[in-house]
Image 1 (cartoon, rainbow over the protein chains, first blue to last red):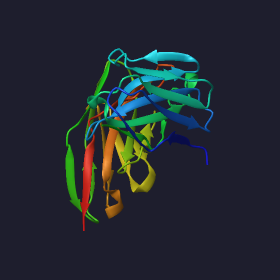
Image 2: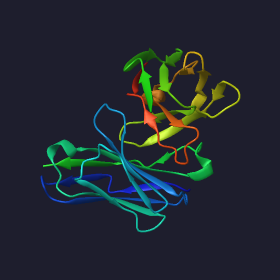
Image 3: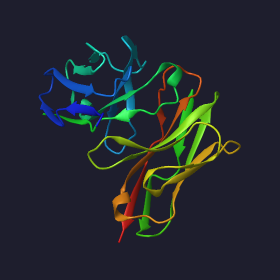
Image 4: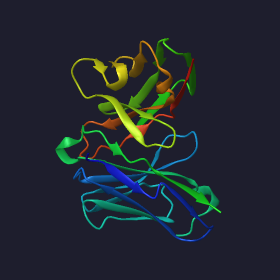
Length: 115
Length: 115
């Protein structure tokens, strides 16, 4: 089945130690998104790639970076994680362009804990 | 800009009873509307979407929603819930004329189905 896969499902890192979360997709969608979701809250968009074009949300901290080496993969890098960055991180994909009515497809998320 | 308000943060309901989850939105442009469900420790799964046409939309798992333009609402309903419907439900909108389909989420409604 075509899908969005996030690895790992659970990640533990130390305060200030860089961490990378990964997302891959077999849907061949041209748009990929990263969301942060804290407990009992709605997902908050951090940034998205429209093809190779990176689009950062205005309130996304500089501590968060992303890379998209090809259509299938996208990475979320947190350079110096703080305790407030503990959350579920969700990756999603969609078809963009003239297909703006297409829904987003989500992975199961990576739950990040900071020690 | 868009905003979404889910009027109930939690909805307890008995098994086999009906449930309605309320969603109101605000937008200066026309939008597409979505309902997503999130089971514990999982990503979001699309329940249904409204793009155009009939205002009553049927989705998966017996859910349906009605778009009301004059009241800017998109309430979700199910006539008879199961224990397995216990989850968090998110209403979301995206601008219909945009090339990308960035979602704005409501705060979520947690449904707890009791036996």
